[in-house]
Amino acid sequence: MKKLFTALLLLAAAMGYTTTVYAGHPDMVHAGVGRILEEDYVDDDDILGDVAGEAVNEKHVEASHTVNDILDIHEEIPEGSVISDEELHRREALALVTGTAVDDGTIAGYVNLGIAKVDNWLNVREKPAEDAELVGKMPKNAGCEILEQDGEWAHIKSGKVNGWSKLEFLYTGDEARAKAEEVITLMATVTTTTLYVREAPSTESSVITMVPMEEELEVVEDLEGWCKITIDDDEGYISKDYVNLAKKLERAVTMKELKYGQGVSDVRVSMVNYAKQFLGNRYVWGGTSLTNGTDCSGFTMGIYRKFGISLPRVSRSQATVGTKIGVGDLKPGDLVFYGKGSYINHVAMYIGGGQIIHASSPKTGIKISNVRYRSPITCRRIIKD
Image (cartoon, rainbow, N blue to C red; front, side, top):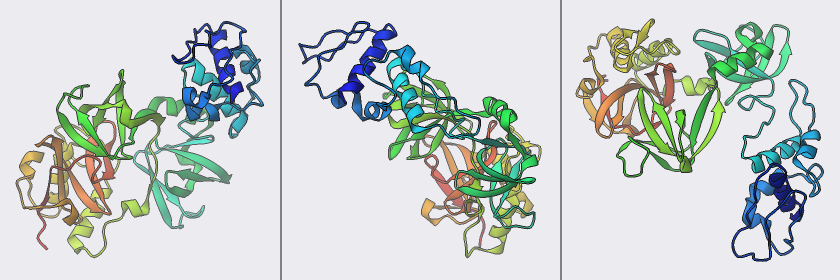
């Protein structure tokens, strides 16, 4: 561990950084180029943390190495190959000192990247055959790891989905990398039980909504200590202290995630199946067309109209119809309402399994989300069965 601390200090010095030792260690001095500190009694885990300890592989980073030495040691990683632990450690050590992001040789975590080349959803099957059982679906521009190829089929993994898709419906190689540059998004993954989304980047600002652990939010602006995010067609601010930031691509969803709940009436089953055929279609503010573009309330209104039920046009008016129910009492076809504080401005339809379908935003269109992806304000039952 001594070599770790010394190597990192030498890296900093070689790059022109001044290294100031923590107070409480009066015998230690500032690092100059080529100078090694006297730090026999220092517990560098306390100073640098466990991440630094994992970052340096001593086969590649020695106390005598400079930044140029470490840059010269790098491995050539063939396309589609997994980066070695040693090379990753070397890059992490360099990134730790320079304050830059680690290049782990992947794109959004994928080594051999494939991207769904479809208008809506790409079928993923259990076996490489047209009549094989569906195991999941990939939305447009979603990413996957291509594990192997078998003729015109690709064995892929995306999210929880592992199966086969036609190669003709995937961007691969240079085409996939170019597409990723267009569609990759900075996402914030929640690391606390409940994250407050605020109107302004301040703890004094009012809370718009609350988001549960592991939910992912799209970042539109990276600020000092805060992120500006979008949630449906709203914007808000979250503290960086309670999220992990990473560039990500959309992922596939399993058939289980797409299924409705069991033991429900035929009309509810039909309503859910009807709604799902519009997944991936456009969000258009003020729109009411399920095929050419709709907003959230236009979507629920259109689904209900197909089954002979008339709903008001806007979400806060729809929230006055039917009977109020709790989130735990939801059945497929019931409506769930969201908004800022107590002000309703978004509506979705419950589809079972803790999932909703909704016209979310211009970026994502009609999609499936967790019912608690943000705090529900109220739920309404309109179907009488």
